[in-house]
Image 1: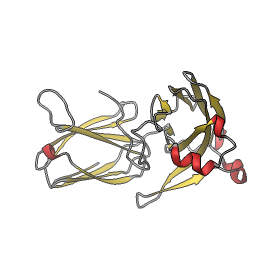
Image 2: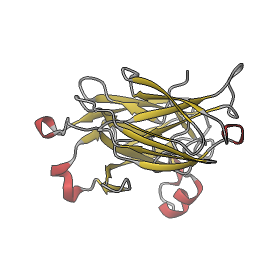
Image 3: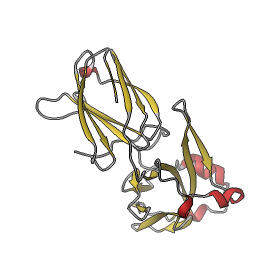
Image 4: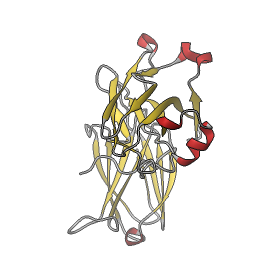
Amino acid sequence: MRLFKCIYIFVFSTLCSPVSNAIYLDKMLTIADENKNGSFIITNDKETTYFIETKIKEIITQEDGSIVRKEYTKDNVDSWGIAVSNPRFIIEPGRTKNLGVRAICGELCDVNKDKTYELLLIPRPYNSMDEDIQQSISIFVGYAPIFIIPSENPEIAFDISVDHDVITIHNNSNTLIRVLIDNCTGVKNGSCSTYYTLIEGREKKYSLPQKLIGENLNISILNHDESYNQKIIIPSNGRFSR
């Protein structure tokens, strides 16, 4: 099973497309290892050299399930939770770069719930560095992958309701969950299966694929490493809470 689909879960609008076919990322979501470190691999498959600028935003979930983004700037550097290995770098044609991410909050890291960050990667042609930056950015849309430091004490809680063609998921956990719907009887495809990923505390509504409307939904709830895996069935116009 592919672990993560296009992460339209909380923030993004252009994550499933290459950056104007300029650069590619190996993944759009990284879960930190036990040392709270992780990385993304960036590939340049064009004949142009690119300058990449990286910005960090901490994603904070509110009580109502909405989110706010705290942008990291030089004015709040004392409260930064993570840092990247190369905030600005050049990538030549045909080359790959490893962008490392590590926690720098030490004992101040909140391990009672996931810490979630958005990394904005903005490319522009290196030979156009003297041109107007805004013009370059308007042409080369950036990626916004997600980096998560998982809770050391995950507690899974959720509320899922189905109202005909809409499924509402409220992740009351202190960690990320994935909600996999699989009503396929043979070959799996997008008409009989789908899944959604929500960060801790997030609430979202999704339109169900046409083939799943009005059906009893076979659902699996998983955490990031699948150490938690609960299977449930929710009928159309039904609800399940844990």
